Image 1 (cartoon, rainbow, N blue to C red):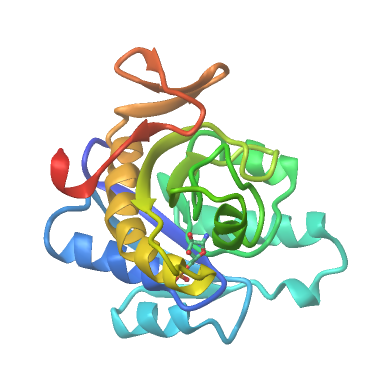
Image 2 (cartoon, rainbow, N blue to C red):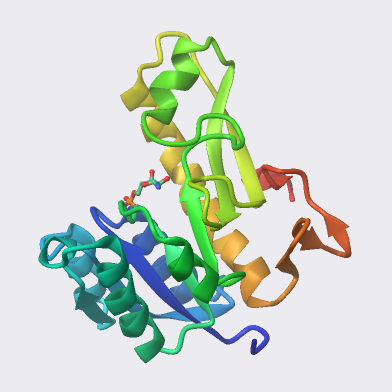
Length: 220
Ligand code: GRF
């Protein structure tokens, strides 16, 4: 992988606020690469407009047009390969990917999940954290492997839960942290500082904890 000038393809299904964060990081020189393509499984995803307005190539692979996950994933993989990305960034991409797809991009496929993994894999993470009486929520950037939300963590940032928080208020407080965390974590992969091994994510020859290294935006 080229150091510091990598190509990113970003996959999304919805509003694209994390895409916006990558574009801001790119504009301010804080991203060690460039967003070359945005691909969505939903033709109406708001994130596609953000990409078009920024002059970035877009593509849609509408999952409703394919009879199987395998067929959809094959076309999606071909579309991704056409942009020759170094790293593929899942940012609110709401499709479960097949093991074949994940293996094809092994070590180059990353995701952001709105919890402190390994806690609260899957959906409704903030509500589940509140229901469990947690004192903090957060977000984790991790390598994607065939098991949903179980890939080795790269970085995670904790966010305090406050009295009276609802799932919506907690999600709103976590989101700006995601926006700082995700480009930073992508840089670690783009520059080869963090990589995926059979034993987990590796940084400076050390295996990171399952959820990744704790990261706090203003304390580095
Ligand atoms: C984020 O909360 C992310 O953690 C989750 O999906 C959401 C995507 O938001 N995986 P956006 O489309 O980037 O605004």
